[in-house]
Image (tube, rainbow, N blue to C red; front, side, top):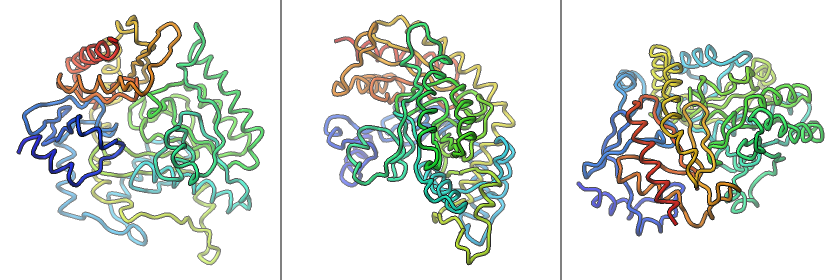
Length: 449
């Protein structure tokens, strides 16, 4: 079989995610036959460094032998069982481990099967908590501009991606949106911390005005990934935790993309030394093997639902594959690798290598900013460096980088004009240097006219 063979079959039956399918009249799909480590191999013998971890999920490389072995063992024992009224060893062990590695007072784990569903759980759980407390009027949510929390209707309602909101607005609940602390917008000479503190005034004002009717504030800690890897200082989270406590509003931390070591610590909230009321996890939780999501919350929230059946205070949310044993076993193997291989400290060395490999691009006439938080590094292409005027989105300059990278053994998938690295943690320094070279070549091509 060749790439063309599979492409023809694919285009006759599939509708791909986040894709204008008409593009594939001229932009070939890349069929993947197998993966190993950071590499993906197609049917024609080409290979590509997976620089974006296959949509930010793969932590320890493709076909990781330790995770493979754990799944093979689990497959012979139990593939799935209903989690309502039943339990199993992998889900109990995983819950114990998650409680152990997350900050107090997070003591209870509720499972879903993808990131959007995890956020839906947190939104519903927060509102339902207040309802059980006799405050059903606390039903609104405060969110940041540029935020992304998923693509189900509830999560789109608390997100701020213009294309989604313009298309589906009639179907969405209205959130209270405040300006993001995105440090790309700071003044010349202003530090990340200073700007993040200044931007918090908007959140403070919103909480002061709306706290009586607000259930929760929801944020992506430190990095707004879908917005173009926009980043801010941990002090914003410190201020937010204190304000949520002061105003009696929950804090939901959506760490679906940034959890499990992406930002330099196991969880991004650690850098602010805070604990949210709800912590949403997915993506890297199984190192990219199987869909799984978890929402951790406190004993206080749990007890607000704990009552006799006829009070109808139970939490109403379920999915068929909730707490799937195979996914839980993959997650346990993932946590084992973190613990046994000292991944967090190793990641800091890799992050330093990433920074060093691209530092010279700070002087590029069409790179407006290089920004980095841990294992996430972004380079923003701009039309005018002095004013940071962006290229029109219709020019699709990031797509030019993507197309070039494929010819140079790399999978880079820019977010608009933002070229970023978010690789598996097993990437080598030499592979990082190669990605930097390919990115530079791509940016030169994309900004040549």
